Length: 295
Image 1 (tube, helix red, strand yellow):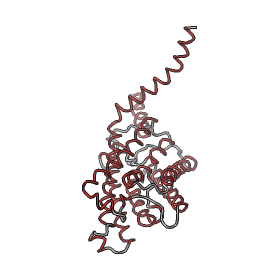
Image 2 (cartoon, rainbow, N blue to C red; image 1 turned 120 degrees about the horizontal axis):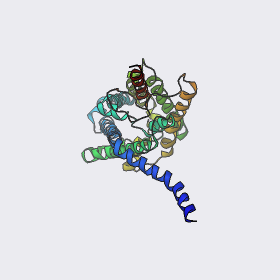
Image 3 (cartoon, helix red, strand yellow; image 1 turned 30 degrees about the horizontal axis):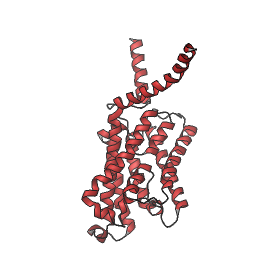
Image 4 (cartoon, rainbow, N blue to C red; image 1 turned 120 degrees about the vertical axis):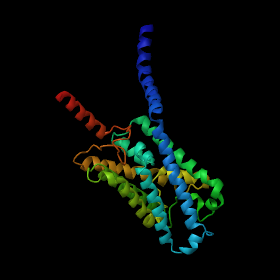
């Protein structure tokens, strides 16, 4: 009887110990990437808050100078698109892969490029970083952020209603992830992936923002919803972006000639560490083994 209990405990404790060990290893080895993801979305939210306050607050001279809402959205799109491009190509972005979005991380996890604990900590870091980024600017422009015209840059459905907002968020998310996967897995376009993502964000903000507020990012939406205490149709922003990006990943798997994504980074720099199940690293290792065996 004692022997049987020991075996049973071994069968239960073995996988549990492995999970704990994997968690500890992930935290010990990959914490810089987690911190970068938090900082990246934090910077994104800081720029979003300041830009929206400048462009939309009724007391802003910029808003008085640019009376056309479409023109103001163009400038907002430029600010956010350039921010995303800068983050993707920065040394930090090259290190973490610049997901900056739980839906992006989930999609690369689905494609087998991100390890489970890395996916968990990336997503936690993105949610925490986005919220902290917005809270950082509150002491400086809190009154402007609280104004109803700005309202902490919340994302809520427009006058067309929640159904249209959901469809818009799904389609935008599908489009963004499709562009990222197609570009990053094409050797001629891979270096341009960040530019494509930033330009697409510019277009989305300019054209679509009146319909859903233009989120495509659950962490970005929650970062605004918490201090604003606005929960209007928040389910849209927690469902449509992941579903849209996961759908894009499925289409990529089924239609691509090489259904395996090369890497989970939006811009892969061969001189920067990669913590993912990276096709570039595997190819380099195979090449090295070939050279060694040939020698």
